[in-house]
Image (cartoon, rainbow, N blue to C red; front, side):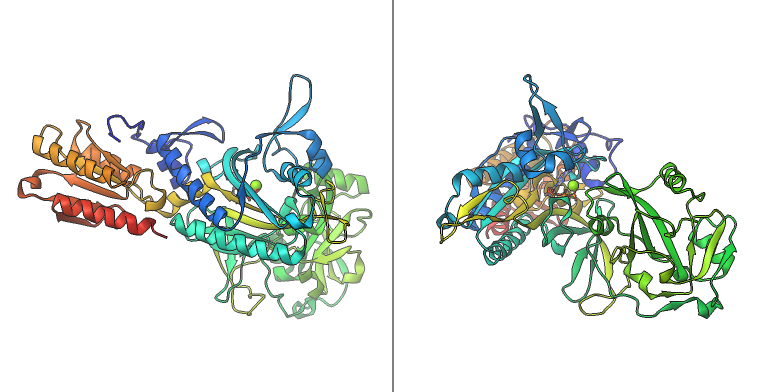
Length: 578
Ligand code: ATP
Ligand code: MG
């Protein structure tokens, strides 16, 4: 490819709406252009990268025994009604109607469609287990599309679905996919950590995520991990309970009484006013779970993990209540209290979930739904609690549930995940096979996703410097750029063309920068776009020397043109050989 013909426009500036490195560089270097919020054009350089990630994924999935197919992007409502998800999926599902007023949606994922395909084609235990996958565009009307390709509305996903006749068979395929995922990300030059995670609205019980560990803002997940093998997404992480009982007696509170606590809307203000530690306060928070209020209780020095709370009450969506919703709730119960004075007392017919830390409280402090008042010296018998669950956000320094050492925290970008679905879809959709005894049984399913476009962006997050992207060889749009410093110099041009031809003939993906531009411009573009290798043909060619530059390390070595060609071929072959 000749740079003069390559469809790429690099920009001088970063785009104004870009917050993270991958978004900034992918736009500046001419890989993507925004079409509308969360929707991007993949320009030729980007498409080459995406196809490489797709092909690595395809090769490893095929090697693992999965079979590729392609399902439509538009899906009919009827199948979503069969699974029960049409009602519950929420606003991320982009719904539309055709000219006959038939309701459809843009596929955010394909469980319903694949389950219907299996139901039609997999009728006997003799055909199982099977794993089917596709690489397809998805559409999710994300609340906050951001970070370019990391969280788009339209994006490319590899999604696989397995069908088995037993839990053992599913376990085996789950492990098989975990290994395939490790291979895929390693081949992409992107080391990942496999962490335990919540299985969320998709259901099922066991799931893991593959995280690219990063210290940048692009990491939307907190990952807790330990020296031992334990690691989990914060939505699933657990820590050992603090062992000590927290008793108000240690601050002289032994008697139950209602105290005036004016203006103590926050835990800090209340602690200061009463001169007690935050751990002695039973914090009460109102959440809206699937449009119903629930009350969550937790020790004053701990935070609620919303996904854990959502699972504890069996909801699909959850959020903290607004001041207006709290007021409405108080009015409906005949109380008069704002945030800071809410309590479990008298909250008949409202679900009350307490974190396990509450169990260890004695003579504690709690709101009683009266403005400017708190109950001190309270005990757990003073009010109703529907259930105790772990709804706590783990903090770094708390102790590992497996080995007891302090947990550490880091940020991660989720590039893939694997779920055990069990019969969540096969049962309601009556997707069955006949077992050895001729009895109909629902398939035991698993599903396995990789964000292809997110993986490309994550690779940039993991490989860049101030000047631009440093693509890993396996997914770089091109391997090498040959830069003649002066296009007016016949010797430089003829050597550069010769190197270009030799590399092309050897099957190396090479670009020659034949533009009549200043060398500074050419070098800048080469670094920005992120070619793994650059061969510069400049003045030293009179001594028979060119320069080979490695983008990753910045190393520059002078050598003869032949040596440069051979070295590059050697490096690329070594990087691509698996
Ligand atoms: P997230 O928690 O980041 O929203 P998810 O749990 O919704 O992800 P899945 O439904 O399991 O993701 O999708 C499988 C993979 O698709 C994810 O691991 C991720 O790599 C990718 N993915 C999900 N949502 C997006 C998005 N909005 N933009 C780009 N890639 C995405
Ligand atoms: Mg999501």
